Length: 84
Image 1 (cartoon, one colour):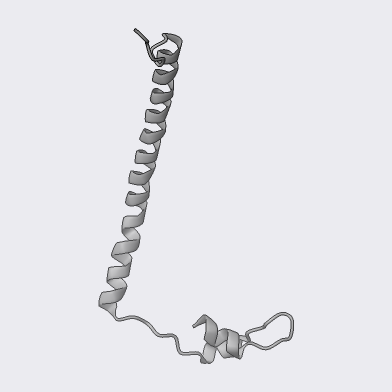
Image 2: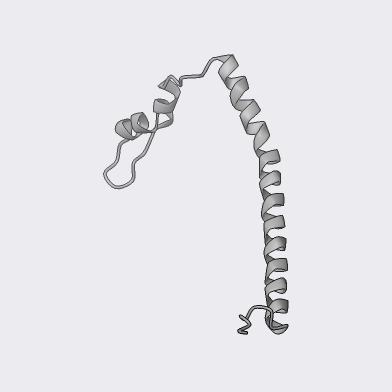
């Protein structure tokens, strides 16, 4: 659709699309079943986003704990090899 409007737009530097052109353009509309399927997918996005945000937050917390653990082991001398 974009390429159709780009092709029909006028103007040398700034392309303009007239309201008349838009009114005369026939837009393809997917069948109702496909529209409903799209709505279902779009409705799932916020829940998926929240889930990913929770995973990300947990990963940050885990990394912070790992950092603290490594520093604690370093200060206790547990990260160096003991030669016998």
